[in-house]
Image (cartoon, rainbow, N blue to C red; front, side, top):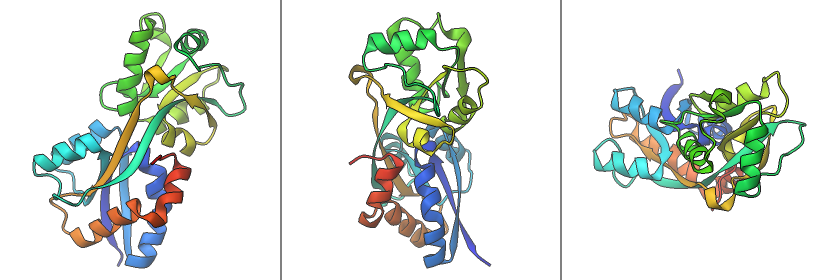
Length: 233
């Protein structure tokens, strides 16, 4: 019977983890089963006692959880930087979002604005700040569509019955989602670049296997895959 390695991960790493599951199972005889979502929600699941061997969260959260004794000290490995971008449905014309003024105008025209949880998701928290900074949060409030994570937001946007909707989430989630396409990164003044890190959970009963999977995620051999999935650096 195949052993199971349990993972809690931010949605930014879903494509990477999914691509490496089969190679890891073939070499170690262990199936990686993951839960993906907003990093804040994944942290909350860990703290609530959900079984976990490997965590993939923002570097800041991994450092915090290590200090609190929830992550094995010295087990963390950075996967790279993930930036946040703007998306539209596949096949639609890409709006100009190169400047704050252009992004504001595009959002004002959009019949729907899709992004992840503005309280627990890295990109969602940031994009809500962008809307407030642009001074249009109230104006577009009725057209905002938020979801538990970026993957869910992009899926919903791809299924939207109206044309011209716009989404914002981390590039890794846009590239992984069918039916949507990346337009561009957020304008420079709104750039969000987040370092994601993998680490071993303190309560893991399979620390050796967990560390092996962390090392695979961050290895030189997986570098090209990480780039294809949207990680930089």
